[in-house]
Image (cartoon, rainbow, N blue to C red):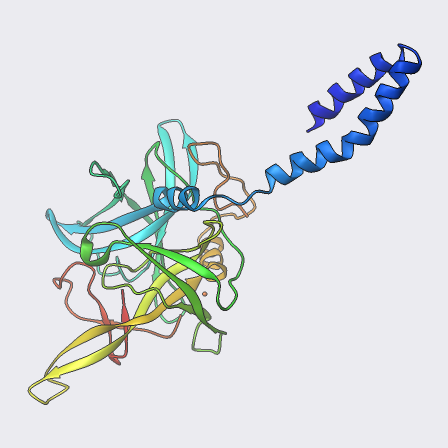
Length: 312
C-alpha cells in the first residue's frame, strides 16, 4: 500500500509540471485515490473460501499415537500451534489432551502423524514437553521435528450458535470432519472448569481434536470429552457395562484454558513464532473428570467414573 501511494505521488508530481492540462489530470487522480485505496482495503478483508478454510485446518490437525513395544496403546488427536526454526531443523509444537498420554511408561514411544488426509502420512517421533491430567487441566504439549509444520491461528472466545468444524481421528482411524455449532457456554464454577459444548458428534480417539471457527479456520479449543449413556448387561450396572457416545454433546477446552497451560509450562505467548511458511503461530479452560480402565484397552478409549461423561 505504501509503495502504491509513493508511485501515485511521483506520477502526480510529473503531471503537475505539465501545465493546466496536467493540473486537471492531477485533480482526477486525487479524486480517485480514496476509491482506489478503498478497493485495496476491500480485497484485503475478503473472507477465505470454504475450501481455503478446510485446507488450513486439515494441515494443522494431527493424530497422536502412544506405542509400547511397537503396539498401539492409545491414540488421540491434536493440533500444531507453532514452529521454531533450529540448527537441526524445524521444531513443531503440538497440543493434545493430557489423558491420552497420562499412562505412559518410561520406555513407551509417542508419535505424531501429519498429513493424514492423504494416503502418504508423515510419522514423526514426539517428545512430551509438558503434561497435566487432573481436575484443573487436561492438556499436553509435544514437540516434533518436521518441515511440514502448519500452525493453527488462535481465535476469540466463541458465541452461542457460532459454526464450527471439528477434525479428529476416531478409534485411531482416518481423519474425520464434523460440522456443528457452539450449543452451550459453561462458565467456570470451581471445581468445574470453564468450557463450551458443540453439537458436532465425536467418538473415542477424538481427545485433543481441534475445534475451529468454520468461517475463518481459527482455533477455538480442543475436544476434551463427550456425553455418554451407560448400557449395562445382565441387569447389574456395576458388573458389566458399555458407555455409548451421545451425539451432540462434545465438551471443549477453550483457547483461554489452552493458553493458560502454555504460559504455565514456559511457552511465552508474546514471542512470535513462525511456522514453515513464515506464518505466525500461536504467538500471543471442561468438567472435573477422572478416568478409569486399563492401559491395554482399545486405542483412544477412556471413560469417566460417573459414566455420563467420557474422554474422547
